[in-house]
Length: 215
Image 1 (cartoon, helix red, strand yellow):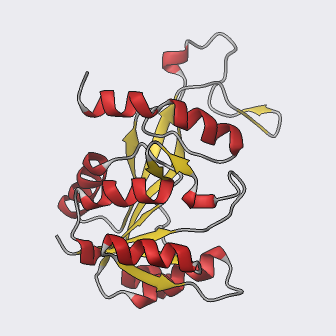
Image 2 (image 1 turned 180 degrees about the vertical axis):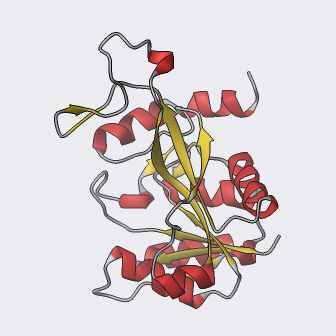
């Protein structure tokens, strides 16, 4: 399989003073994610993008590639610079903040992306909830509409994006106007966005391994 994985990483962020180096299980969030990637990709396909020397040392220890993030770049600029630095046509953008998206999901997503000849694919969670937008009903018309009849919404998990490198660079965006959606369950969709999420995710690690073993 010809693709390149890009994992952005920082020493500090809003959910932990150690950022992607925050403890997670017996390791760190970053090394946890690297281990998942190693289960479906060659070492040469995995790239960490960061401005941290500590993270650079981790990349070297793990035998994967390190892309130096230039100072002063926005997150979006950093991502495009990373994409420019690689040559494979297919790019898989992965975030450490979705720790329960494992190798099987990545494999299934990439297989769907290739088999259906898609331009972009994003991991999402499907929800059937009563949604209001601008103080108006968004996806239902009757207060007594059964939940199963409510039009579903799809929430991006921010865990995995797959896209065509050249199209992304040409149009300066990673997703097409109508990206394809890959559904994951609520557990897999867990995303760390703040300190509370981080603490909850750590408590869910045992469940992750049980799910992996189909216990």
